[in-house]
Length: 442
Image (cartoon, rainbow, N blue to C red; front, top):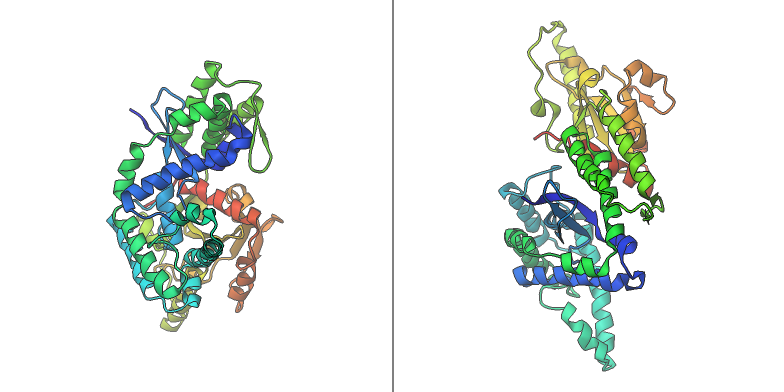
């Protein structure tokens, strides 16, 4: 039985695996138009600047490397969540709960009164409005000059698309995205019937495509903490290699310019095998943004030391602890993790700029968690290595900043977590989250 194996980036696949590199634009257009037809068939709407096609899904059975290439429904959903700027828990299932969250975002969109509100609450839709005006103005110029190109481009602009005025833009967008949300399962069914196989076989170098898929399999292994998943991917690559189907003369390049060849594939396989044979797997679990440590993983019943303190002291700690928890929840973190083992009781907050902040979550049953432990700050690239060390070792590591809960600790932390993120920072934080994502608890 064929099942989804992985999602692959379309632009890199086209760039590295096309038989004719000069036809990259035409190749991308094929996939975009194919998916645009799918969108139009189901929703009767299509946005001129988003074809939901940047990712392709690879399907295969257990015995084969890759059997079917088709549009990614998961990418469509993720794009929908991102466009509507919805705060959705990591790995949330595509069910009625998701429908409810997205429809609530549409209620907020429907109440938008000015462009400032739109920009703050729906930044991607605001960009659509601006881009739509530019596009409409260019069409108007062509129309005024009686250009034939106007009629070629007019099909991009229709009743559901981008209007010049906010008054027209809001209701048309609400209507369009409501249909995307409510009828999305029909698109999922449509995708299962869509295959890119014949086009890919005609227009792509299958040896390079095999190298590209092997590279993507290994990327999945490198970000996963699920041993059985890693073994599954490695077995698929091993079978392919044993049949001598991965050409030793083939090479491709990643977006950052790193060469991928057969030697690199073997080296990465060996490194991954060493990692999964290492007993010190990462002791952190990703949790949803709207859930606390206590509700995700309850402590086992153990003998507890009783600490006697007066009411005033207890109230003061309660106030400090509540303020601490509320402060972290108010920060713009990308993801949150709970610590296991020696870091039990700690929460890690991962920020877009790559900073990772470890602090204890306040627990009313343990009053001194209000401010009794130091804060440890490290960078996403080093988190997996450093978070396996003891707290004493962290204090002596130059890569770790240590901060105490002094009077102005929040101000000091704001300087670190609100530092502007570079593209490299964003990549590193996303990569760490993707690795931790595999162990998410719901």
